[in-house]
Image (cartoon, rainbow, N blue to C red; front, side, top):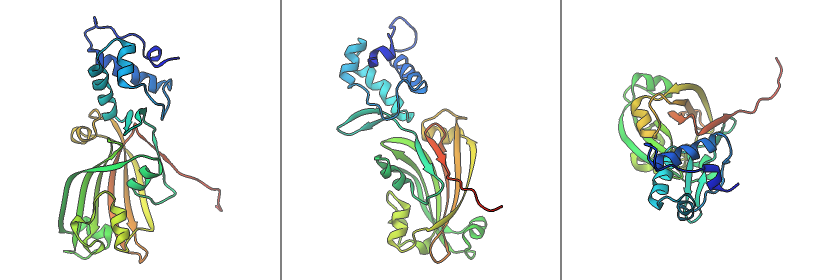
Length: 247
């Protein structure tokens, strides 16, 4: 079955704009798994010709689906159905490493970077004395240009050479300073995105998300990271390997 047959006919006589009709048709095809993860979509020019619409209509529809995380664009290769990311709980890896392992490009958009004194709550979590300086990193994480998660990290200032040491990967910066985490405690729970969070991630307010709270430790036992990561529920699967053990 061709892509145009999967989509069906678009009706210019309907009150719904053509690009929204196309978006909805592609969205439903992905949900029904008629279009599968990593499947390539036709070139915008070819699809516009097959559907008898303008290329601008196709581009606008695809732009919206990329923002939703349902499609991804790969430079020089075209547009693909985005694959859901499987995040393993059995291995301590960063977001950048997870994306690289799946052939996807990780980028960030900074909400804020700041330096300050540890709060009472952070002091307990990180095992730091009151007044100890810390760095705080708030950012949006992207995979192939699609927003995937909101990340709020607090790191002891002694674990990094400077506030600006973190570019794309926090773990890369910690590793370069001999402070890469080797173990972590994590807690996962379901959340509903607030209006502000939803706007940052390009989803509807109240959409389902997953919150991971992580406290990570360096080889010397010092806590070097406390992070809250809010992941899009429509883009992530969390996987854990379980083994039978003594009672």
